[in-house]
Image 1 (cartoon, helix red, strand yellow):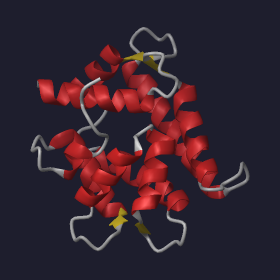
Image 2 (spheres, one colour; image 1 turned 90 degrees about the vertical axis):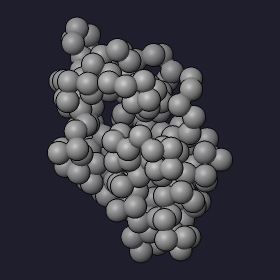
Image 3 (cartoon, one colour; image 1 turned 30 degrees about the vertical axis):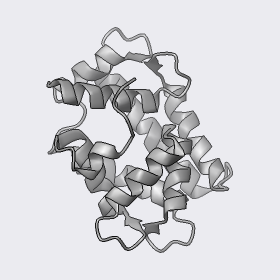
Image 4 (cartoon, helix red, strand yellow; image 1 turned 180 degrees about the horizontal axis):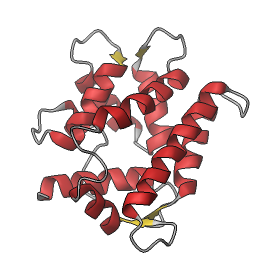
Length: 184
C-alpha cells in the first residue's frame, strides 16, 4: 500500500469515526445514517431511512467481519488499513457491488425532488450529516464531480468519484477531493 492510499484511508476512517474516539463501531454507522435521514426529514417510519440504516449496518457487519482482528467490537485505523491492503474491503472487482446500493440509498433520501440528481445544497447536506465533511469541502467536491457542469450530480457521477477516491491516484481525479484534506 502506498503512502497516498494510506492517507486516503485514514481520511475515510475519520469520516466514519463520528464520535472521534479513534475506532469504528456499529454506533458510528447507525448514528450517521439516522442523522442523515433526519437532516432530510425522514423519520423512523420512512422506508428510505430504514433502507439506509440497514445498508449502513450491513457495511458495518462486513467491515467488522473482515477487519476486527481482535474481535473487540471496534476497528482501529491499523485494522482498517490492513483489511484494505489484504483486499478484504474495497477492490475494483467488488466496488460496484458495495457502493451502488449505498449511493442509491443516499439518493433516496437526499434527492428531495426525486429527479435522480443532487444539487450542491443536497450534496453539502448529505456529506455533512453522513460523513462529517465541512460545507466548503463538499461544495468544492461537488463542482469537481459535476463533470458535465450542468449544476447537478447523478448517482453514477458520485459512484465514479468514490471509485476514484480509492483507485485513482491522480490529483485531478474528482475522487481526490471527495472528503477534503488528507491530512489529520
